[in-house]
Amino acid sequence: MDKGKILSRSIWVFHFASAACNNCDIEIIDALTPRFDLERFGIKLVGSIRHADCLLVSGIMNEKGATRLKFLYDIAPKPLAVVTFGSCGASGGLFTNSYNFYGPPDKIIPVDAYIPGCPPRPEAIIDGIVKVVKKLRTVRCVM
Amino acid sequence: MVLFYYIVFPGFLATFIAGGVASWIERKLTARIQTRVGPPFLQPFYDVRKLFIKEITIPEHSSRSIFMISPIVALASISVVAAVVGLNLINPAYGFNGDLIVCVYLLLIPSLCVILGASASGNPLASLGASREMKLVLSYELAFWASLAVPVLKTNSIRLTDIMSFQALNGSIAGSLSGIIAFIVAIICMQAKLAKVPFDIPEAETEISGGAYIEYSGPLLGFFKITQYMMLVILPLFLLEIFWGPMNSTVGILKYLLLLFVIIVLENTNPRLKIDQAVKFFWFGLFPFGVVSIILAILGV
Amino acid sequence: MIEDIVKEKLGKRVLNWVKRNERRYYIEIRKEDLEESVKILFKDLELRFSIASGVDTIDNFEILYHFSADREDKFFSLRVKISKENPEVPSISGIITAAKWIEREIWELLGINFTGHPELKKLLLPESWPEGVCPLRKDYNKNV
Image (cartoon, rainbow over all chains, first blue to last red; front, side, top):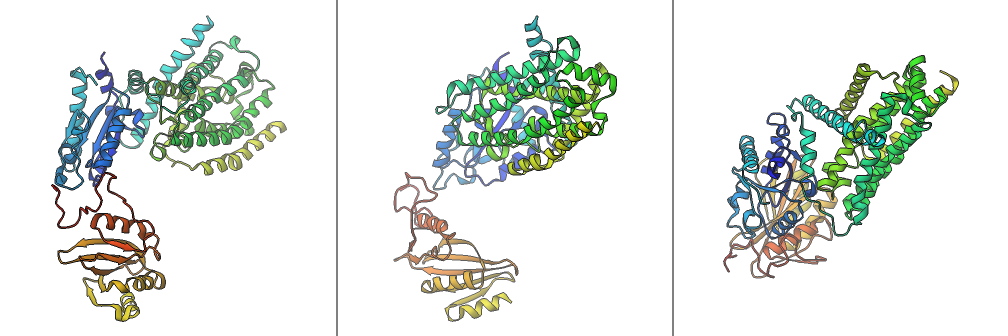
């Protein structure tokens, strides 16, 4: 069994929020509440990047956030999937013309899936997770 | 033959599988109490299998050898306890004199390995988790030993098979007044030894980002997880052997499930304590009860 | 009522008193009277200092110091107008220690100098940001 299949059954998520408005952070928590219950897919929020299989990035990258994001990606044990959350994660959202905008996360680290929305509905979050799980199982991930 | 007992049954492999099932029961019951669906049946095994395919990362400022050896030592010691406790259940002839004391000493080693491994991590949050674990161990070990003195006093023996056969003849130790107090004290100490809420202070996820385990990744974290699963099976079985009498097959399994249920309900209905609250609770709240039960046992009640 | 007490204690320093609604009062004062007014509101009347906010209106700069009367559920904001040629205002961090960081933030983003501030250095912007370029000014051009 290749690594992607083994990883797809038990994904531990580390949430990194840099200069976020915190709307997306609230939606992440409420996807774990009983109504949508992500734990039945084996997904768990962990406190340390060393335990993580998925790096969930939300918010705008300014220069301080970008250096820390690169550092987190480097010290996380591979194989790792990266998912960006919200329209800020996909392209910069409202803040593309702001003075401190460094770039969207995929300019800094390779990204596996994008979850659109401002903030994304929990149904969109579940759809994004299905995308990640399918990708892990089918694509032969280099990671 | 000894190797078979130690590694396959009832040692490492059998206890690991039983521990995975027990951990699933815990997660499913917790989810049901919170009106969620909960994870599928093999989830604890999926977690461990995934941990073994990740790469090991060793922090730059850590003491490498201690960092890498601690999880393995924890797993080895809990396997020995599993072999001793399990063999006593199957065939009393395999016990030896003093195996009660050996078991309690060996049960301390996983906590010690967490402390060592966390101190060797080179991370300030890990050393915070290590100091909290040290304080927790200092607080509950006292009450634990006090409660364990009651079966020893009553049966005049430190051999597990003697205690079990005494209970087969005279009724379980938890039937007497001193026994039931000691049993309750031991259950609460077991909750702390398993590092479950309200005593999961060393691994407080939201407070200190994983605490003692913050720098562990991949297979090393997998060894710690397997140790946690095995403790979830071994500790209640150990207490049941000493306190609650004859453990034949079906009755024994039912008693174990009841004790597991008590652990899960305690876990879901309590908030996490602060470390100074926990130390005060064990020293000044629970240890006096242990002393009372010892006195009652000496008096013959 | 607390607003009458405030009005009475500030006395002649009030240049303009605006009551936006039942809970919000905007008081305009000169920047020379800032320290005494803050002492009156913070020490004598024991209002809580909430935050300070700086704005670049095209004619001049404005700093609003927001004080909260928690028991009566009312907010008083002291408005200080600062000219663009000489953007300076006395610092209130001698009276309220908690004002140190917000004054650093207003200094680095708007370029207003707080005289008497113990350590005026960057708080939010990265180290590689050029000195003297203030992003929240209306004449800031990103492409320069």
